[in-house]
Amino acid sequence: MASPAYRIESTYPLVGPLLPHLHAAKSILVSERELAVAMASKSSTEPFGHEIRVVHLPSGEVIFRKTDAFSPGFASDF
Image 1 (cartoon, rainbow, N blue to C red):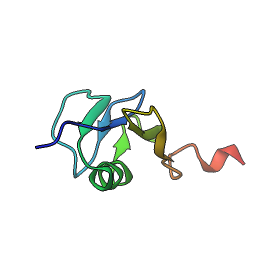
Image 2 (tube, one colour):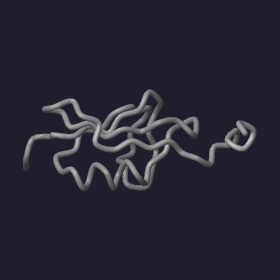
Image 3 (cartoon, rainbow, N blue to C red):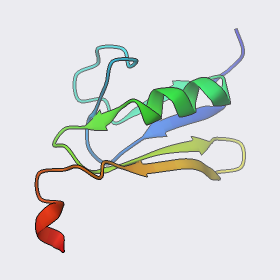
């Protein structure tokens, strides 16, 4: 197995159907780019609505970023 080259991260705990059950994990290391982006895109934060990023570890480049648009307070921002 290749060494992890990508980190899925957030400042809040990550939750999702493709993530391993980790208590209050704020980052997960993954070896494949496609897998990291898929896992991040299907994930959310606890509490809901905060940013999730995928970072390429060797370069430090953020290759994917998302914020859940349908957080409970989203509509009140307009």
